[in-house]
Length: 129
Ligand code: HEM
Image 1 (cartoon, rainbow, N blue to C red):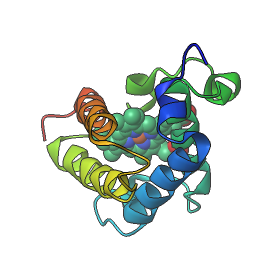
Image 2: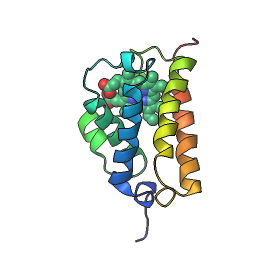
Image 3: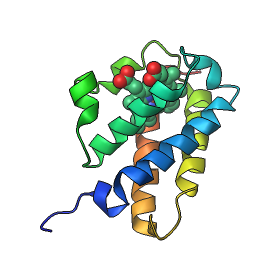
């Protein structure tokens, strides 16, 4: 193979499925985040995050086929995201990343994922408190 994407390198769909499933299990139990989600069923939100992340890391482009350009900052405008919400989101995501074993996610790939999530979460902040 001439070019393997990050998506392929970390185990493809199975890995992103695990990541978002653990993430939303944590969201469901989080008293800051859970009330922010408009829908009772977190399944559709989980699927959107998974499709977005798969696309971002070089996997299938299903997210944009269904939702168009991500424009994530704009899509998060309806929600007040300050440092508390950002840190709650990152806490769930760190738990999700930690649930992927070292054979699937070696240290450099793990670090790349953590760095991206921290940058992305900060960029979604739209409130000073
Ligand atoms: C959607 C919260 C950060 C990706 C949502 C929704 C909420 C939310 C409440 C609506 C649920 C839905 O209907 O999909 C937050 C909070 C964050 C955060 C509190 C704290 C920083 C992020 C980050 C990413 C992300 C860092 C990407 C790396 C998405 C995606 C959607 C979404 C892809 C669905 C957008 C769509 O297609 O409608 N988020 N989010 N979020 N979020 Fe976040």
